[in-house]
Image (cartoon, rainbow, N blue to C red; front, side, top):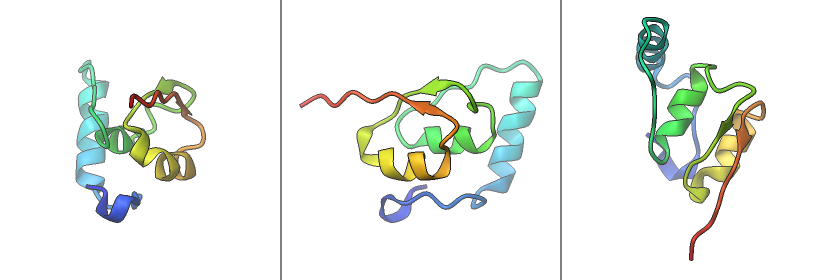
Length: 75
């Protein structure tokens, strides 16, 4: 979903609509790793905190500045 480490907004409109609809019907949405970019595209994370793998930090912050990204790098 994230080619070359850069997220392209609008690339998966059907999935974004489906996620939004499922949430509207009461589903709890969750994600792992870069899937957070897809959840953020729904707008459901605006004004909220989220976490993901640090490798996608730059593209996430560029695309979704209204989501508070909390990262912790484990070495």
